Image (tube, rainbow over all chains, first blue to last red; front, top):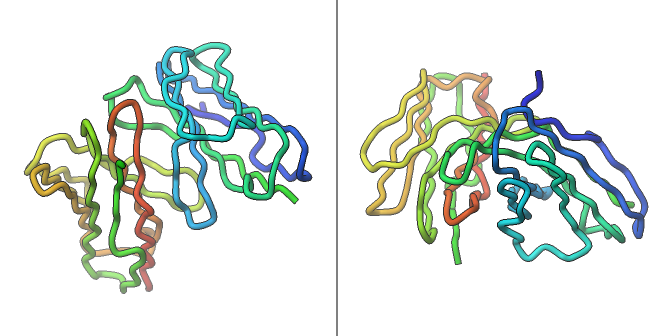
Length: 113
Length: 109
């Protein structure tokens, strides 16, 4: 049983396209996150959701829109993709804020051509 | 602005060596500090530290936090090639985790 799963694992697309990445956790956690990891392996938070409500939006362009249909899912939709969006995107979850450990999904490697 | 700084950025050692990785932070409303290991894919959890001076230990890995001086260290003794990875330090602040740039460790046979 995969605790945090993401689809797809790889995404190659042209500039200007719109794409979505899906994330699901089966841990019963209340809090979910999206991170972007660049080519230098720097992991930067983009969004965090607690019980389907947006808590943090870290100065991410509004081309990125997260959606949480329920607390087990947090999807990321990206409009008008740009070259600089190429990165690995990780979804993660934690039991709640202040509960320490985050569990990460396997990552989605996005390449924008 | 919140920040987490790790040093060294990279390290190459031989099997059997002992290494110490450093993490210093300036984060508003500190709640905890976490260490992760990242090999080819997703980061995996190693330790969570909330109190100063209490060492957490797991096999050859150990870690300690100093909340007065705002830093943590991760020690790995008797390193093995399987320890080769990026080690990430993250600090939990208000509703978010701030990650350092990581230390890339390579252990040679």
